[in-house]
Image (cartoon, rainbow, N blue to C red; front, side, top):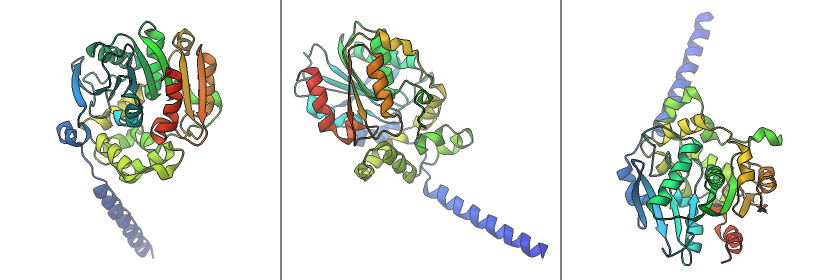
Length: 319
């Protein structure tokens, strides 16, 4: 009887191992050199500029005589492509600059493995300097929003206006609302899985993560999933994501009171990562701030509905 039980157990374990191996093979996705990705994701007007010894993927569009160009900063595991709708709607009348933050997109990891807020603020300033921009409007989503408001507080002489789109910065426990961390982020920050994540990237995990971030999951297209899968495979990006998540910390919230720039806060009412209560707190804590909530949108409102969100931006900028 014991022999039969052991044989059955071994058969079950062998079956589990077999199907697990098939799943790993199906999701096998090693790193891809950046040059192999440029043809699809760095078409004109993309270019690369050297900043602090790193090649930064940049798109710089619109009239270059704009006295206060608009700089757009994306969020974690995203890229400059998330702002395509805004860039198309603004570039006829305003200079629009967007770039892949270090650790993400085609820019990829930095040599220092430093993804602190201090480093990101330094990068924003250095990119602006490189492009000859002295004063600018600064907009950011999620991580990019956090970088934006810290930059506005620390460089008040350079930030003319500030736009926060579902920006991070507050610890979620302040609001008593459980944070629904996307599955992809949970895997990247789990020590036992980080080594595996470097080589496998299940498309289903990426799609599920994006569906969590959209107010209407039906708007997540195969093309959107393709973009995130392919850019995540940029050499070094997955390791950089793990390092970024390790280094994340709540910034000095007292900086919010020091922001002098007029501020527009946009928020998705169905944001399951950063609840709308955070938007209300930004409006309260930043002088001269105004909040607009889009009840049906999620964590990426600038991408989910660029026309409607851009209408608020146009009004804010007097366009």
